[in-house]
Length: 617
Image (cartoon, rainbow, N blue to C red; front, side, top):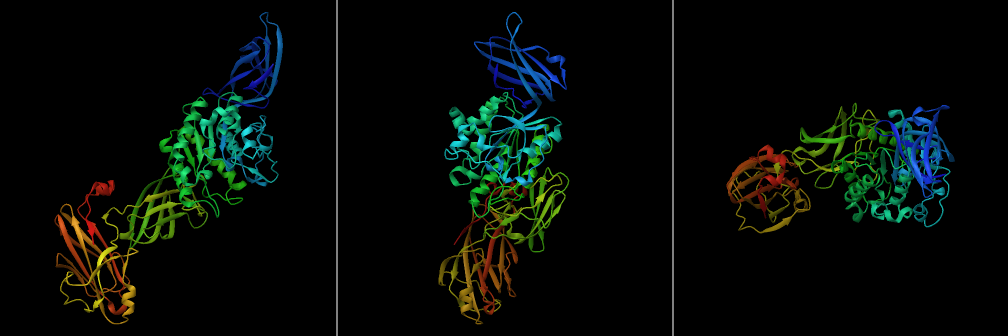
């Protein structure tokens, strides 16, 4: 008798929902009936004493070894008896465990590149199916590529045999298995399937028909080799897809891959835990790197029974690979997520709401997170958030943590925060250090739009602008300028601040005046407010009627210096603003319009649900 699949020395068999084994066994044997006997601690199990489990015909047999209680170890004897009940062949399998079996797949951080000096002490009840198709106690590195029997792993190495690892090879798998053992109390089996540097295209399930010449085909072969039953999949991959063409397809490809696994691994609810890619130093495309991370964060919303584990706070042993110590933390995180996924307990941390709090003139952002265990914490000053405003600048000067909240203090004026975006782990090499009490990191996320709760236009950058005019002091006696009689030209400001600094500085302390004009087109009656920031005497007119005058305006100009309400019937309205040069101290204006009569429920729905004025220069 020779066993081809399903039962080998030191194997871990997958338990069923009754905590009993159910392994599909195939091989070659003389024709006859297959009987199984199992012993534990030297005693034969009453339920497995010369028990019929299969039949051999035409030199091949199939059998199902079910009913062994989770635990072990067991020694198994398979006998072939002929029609007279005579034993004609016997095969013995030793040291068999029953528990949970996992496929570990993806690229290098799952394969393991952490320094071996950080490897955990092996445990006899956590075992690995190594690349040479043998089961042993799980000991780093479990991806012993230099002994692989699957051709794809050699092909991906340029057709050359891999060299043994002497210094590195720690991945998350062994730590995952050890922590799952502590969580479940049953033996753990790890089927090593990862390969460094591989892409979603190389993991394409459509290549299954290539067998061991494809990564997916090799993983399916290893699944079938070990009894055609597993508890779930742990996946760490995405770095090789962080470029435009592949990043655009990442979610689609992951959905196809998980669907194929659930079909080919015979479990439509197969639990899958993926790791959100972490950090790369001095390399990678930030835009596409963050795109992969955001897609991975959102995958649980589109793929049921999948959880994403962040790793952004973990340290490296080189420019892209997690350190050995970090891999141990990651393995525990994957185990925690897998255990919670299977038991429908606390999922990974996720941002829930973003609110803006006005602190004097600057905006403070309050972020609430779901699923925090204990409290949010950081080993030092909390770090990892980025706020990007329209100028692209980063604007955080302090972050505080309180229970499940992050309080982010910015340098952005409170009335300018709308439309900015919040990120965690922005770029390819951020420093992030926030976890909860269970050592689970915040996920990389963003861009998440920060809503101010107000209906405000972007800053007005295009205006009709006069040439430099003679000064008018505090503007007390300045009538509404006749823009048709003035030399006016279209001016497009490169920034939010419409800046006339060079022209004003050129005049020195000599007083001067600028006139700005624009048309406000309203498709319906609106209650509006002109939000004005200025650094000199200012006066404003709507349809040639004065609506505002501040003779004492001075620097610095702040976007919220004045809010000037007015009613605007449907149609076009001319807005004219005069700015005094403030004897060389005035440089320009901030200008925006806010609509005041939009219900809060529509603002929450978004700008597509209400009309805003159109600005025409």
